[in-house]
Amino acid sequence: MAQELKKENSLSWEENRIIYMDEQIYIPNNKKLQEQILQKSYNPINVGYPEQQRMLELVKRNYWWPGIKENVKKYIQGYIKYQQNKVQHQKKLEELHCYKTSVWTDFG
Image (cartoon, rainbow, N blue to C red; front, side):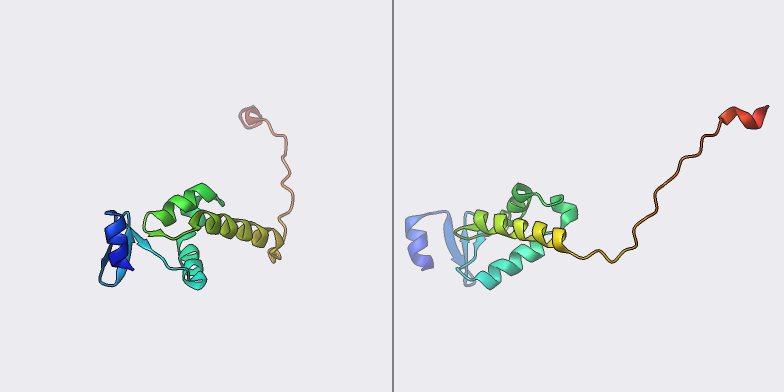
């Protein structure tokens, strides 16, 4: 397969049994592997809460597969649904109350 890619497109090549396309590692049609890459690539701190375009940019720095954009979109949508349905185990914080004080009362 790599030989065919090399003939058709000079941006594709094989090295150490890894296929590269435009300097990205080509990921075969393996849903489990693609899911693992998405999980490892998603970090809310780096991506921002959840930002589809930003995550796509991060994944495509190293990897490429047919349908990558749609996979990222579905992953982000699934993450949002998970966050919305996640049970909160933390105790709700009490409401903060402001007390009216004057800065000048201590200097009277």
